[in-house]
Image 1 (cartoon, rainbow, N blue to C red):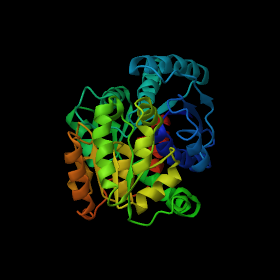
Image 2 (image 1 turned 135 degrees about the vertical axis):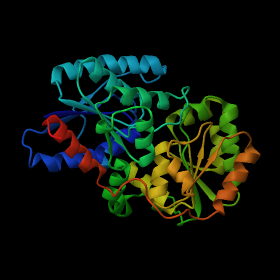
Image 3 (image 1 turned 60 degrees about the horizontal axis):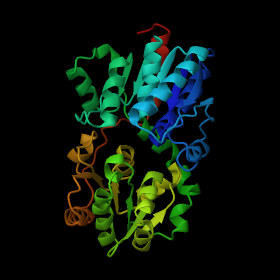
Image 4 (image 1 turned 60 degrees about the vertical axis):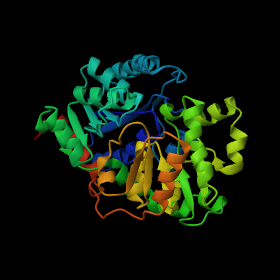
Length: 372
């Protein structure tokens, strides 16, 4: 039984880590179980890619594709598809594990589907019901090509059932990102450096991420968000690990130095440093789906700013997250200020017990061996 794990971006790396750990555990019993990691190169920067493999002890990818990422979604996905197909033809895996909602997720599933290779979609069933968003397109199309659908929550499972997917293909085992946090939380507390290097104090700073094209494609949109953060920084320190795309946009418009004067802007950081900052922040302000959940698992309130609603609806229902459509600096700042004084949400974890990865690999093995 040979498994191909397709990764390409930060969320993929994090979710792959507990899956690899589970595979290694099952290899003791199933001697014929092998795997290889196929990296599309979607995140190629050292701080956006290599650091995750180092910190999370994930084996280096067996294949790393040289794909032009500075282009359109279609061309990027197409180039991935061509090169993924070449590797899959050579390796002939018994199943491809496609994770999340990135272009790498879609390309991996497409390559496998064209070759008649069964697909397991980890993080299936999530919906924003927004066809203009690449992530939502990637999710839906990948789901429809997959043999096994691993939904992280009841919401995901119900979405799949409502859309007519066979119940026998749907598995609700929990969220592998929660597995990852449980696996690395204590390690992060011991080894992460950025919190101490910045001399931060617990619950006395706001942690921000900003990476989506929709929030960085125009300087006007970006300034609404960043100017609100500048106002926030008058009362509490604001820490912003800056995505390369956002940094380039600010420098292009000669704004980088200005925002550096008011915000604590740092280079992208690894998973362990991010866990510690999320844990000790008073508030997380993000446009990232993965960071939303990590903040929740760390019991830190969160603001998700975007034009469409989150696919992690449970976080809103439990009161841990506020959704904001950035329309003006004043409106954005008002929501941040309100969230800073709102306090924690309600108790509950709808994303499993921390054994999702193990149950996922067990199901895949069972499926490949022809067991029910």
